[in-house]
Length: 352
Image (cartoon, rainbow, N blue to C red; front, side, top):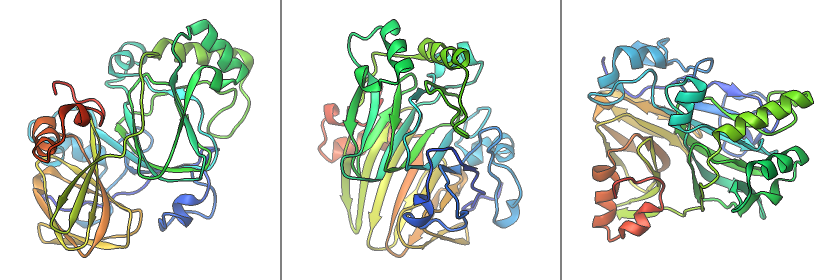
């Protein structure tokens, strides 16, 4: 594989909770003048698989690249059925359904899927007073939870937390959740589209479910629920370097997310694939002799074999990757003086 910065197609989801904020507020070009709920920035999910749009690999799907070049694309020695990361911009102009995604064990046992979906939300914008629903209250058993879900009385059984720009929520598989209205986020997660939701309508078009179908969905949700899970918003942990602030937003064995703000050109070095999403003005990314302009709210996939890119001009980027936790997250944060207790709040840092 001749590695270079890859631009990909962006599959769209037009669920009923979406609006126009990704186009009008983030400034993402090429979107229709109709509501868009989600732009799948980097996706290898069946039915939403992205394809390369630039260079000699143009027209090749991400799935094909992952199967042909796992070492060069993802990381040396990596093997898997699909690219391991999924990233999205999500417009929560309306309330998202109350739902959950199975964790790995339950996805394999109940859904016959290779993995579940743990995710994280990085809040890009939220209206004053915006909130999310996250986790089941202590002492609520399944019978009480089902009754509340059927009554659509979510606050009786779930925690409601404030949402503000800059915070990150790490949401493990099995945690019941919802956010919106009036919220705009960047989401990074395991590659999966499995979910169970508790609403009496279909997310795609709002059409009403039958009572039997609604109750069946809730029963399936309860079978995958992990009610012990808790989450609190985190402001991130910052490392200051020359002309660069690196904010570690979240970290786990499945993904890490950093937010970079820089006032001068930077080098980004890596040994595994990086997803780069632009939150600021257009900038230039250079690697292996290829120069790519990254527009507002656009994303690139940087193959592992690329090793290094140059980031030209000032900018603000989100950078997602499957981390080597001890080397790429824990060690630099310890060196900066953060305690293990503080580092652990970023997500799931097992073995810390």
